[in-house]
Image (cartoon, rainbow, N blue to C red; front, side):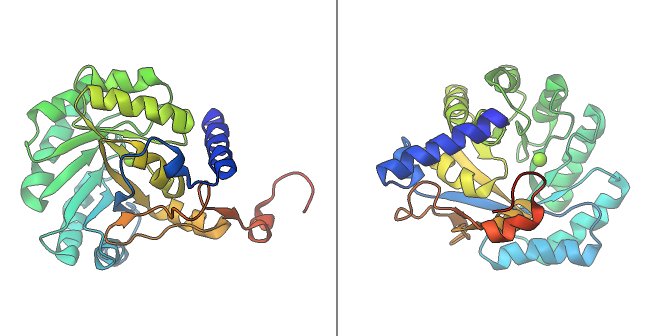
Length: 272
Ligand SMILES: [Mg+2]
């Protein structure tokens, strides 16, 4: 993750020195990245859960994700509340964060899809359980994509998921996978295995980086990261028509650190 931070900073610097927006300094094939609204924590009361996900749909984001499987018995009422709030059309995604065992996950995969029309099941089992992921992918409903990859740090972490066909859609986090340089390599691996790549979090960076991913599917517009980015940076992007569109007129990542607002979170060093 430290390598990723340095790599992203160097790409940002290079683009700034060239007077280009970062996505224009990369071998980009896109000028925007579709997003999905993500949050729906398991400790939210039902009304907050439903309002959060419906709020993204009202903003024109046609796909939303909630966390599941911490207490599986609670999930049916949570999913019903969300589906009732967002209506029949928006895509509904779930993220089990590796909370289930393979056969349990398989049973839930069918229920999620058949009863609430869930189309994306993320980390139904631990992302280190490649065989379990493949079991859910191969025996789950065809309309339900199994996804994992947010814990990929080095290329081998991604081939471990791709080679045994453990996922329908690969995920990658640009702040974990050795930055933009690492992400471009992961993009090639995904394309070589005929699998789409979805961005995990860090929307301000991912919006630029995933313009250079030919098979980019979408970007996780994650509640907590959106909140923290808007707390500390100027120039962050807000979704338009369900996508993030990096501003070609702003060099680099287009961000400025709001040092005065960041000062209260300082843990060491001199005050500026
Ligand atoms: Mg996840």
